[in-house]
Image 1 (cartoon, rainbow, N blue to C red):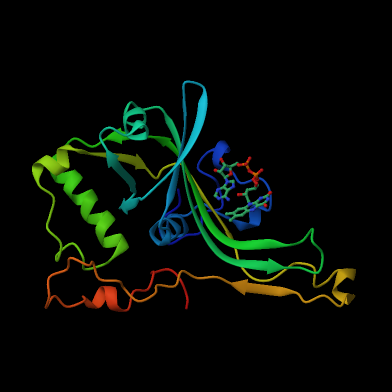
Image 2: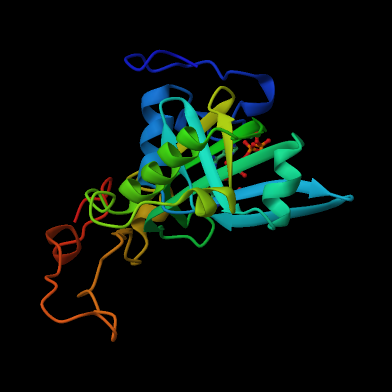
Length: 228
Ligand SMILES: Cc1cc2nc3c(=O)[nH]c(=O)nc-3n(C[C@H](O)[C@H](O)[C@H](O)COP(=O)(O)OP(=O)(O)OC[C@H]3O[C@@H](n4cnc5c(N)ncnc54)[C@H](O)[C@@H]3O)c2cc1C
């Protein structure tokens, strides 16, 4: 992968090279990290007994390592912890692209595909750091308010680490691409509709004790990485 300051043109491996519309591909850390950090959901793809599974989960990044976590009883956590190959995908949907023709309709998106193998995290301190990264990724500031995990809770949680060494990003922005084709003469509206994640007003838990103020980070929640 290229340095944080350069836009790497070369894929880190032939199997991570984007083939179609490859001018949308990015292989530099800056692009890959920003998609991973803005994404709320990762999909874990793996094969178990010949059957492919694609399991949605939370994720977090610390430096050049991607972390996922789950119950120690979860099949995905157990199988991936054994070191079988995994493909992790993070997808952000940024808009709908309306072309004059059905054929040219598209979406604006940012996505990352990571290939590799996972390692089960054993050290309590690294597990704790990963849980902090998950929490702070969702709500910066929340870690210092919420009760931190106990040793028993950390034991019941599987944490896996996957290096971000073999990864690609693909990013589409802007409008349709038929403006310089004969279709531009058609009386059909064309353009794009940006989409964002929009938080509504927080709903207090019915058992919340009186007098506990809504924290500022929840009051005006905005997902980082989205323009609103
Ligand atoms: C929200 C969304 C909607 C899409 N809709 C369509 C659609 O309707 N039809 C369509 O053909 N394509 C669509 N794509 C693009 C699609 O993800 C693939 O990029 C596309 O199928 C071309 O793959 P390929 O044959 O070039 O590469 P493949 O041979 O499939 O992949 C080679 C390598 O390229 C990398 N790669 C491929 N795609 C991506 C990606 N999206 N992000 C990061 N790395 C990638 C991976 O490392 C992969 O191992 C969509 C993408 C997103 C995020």
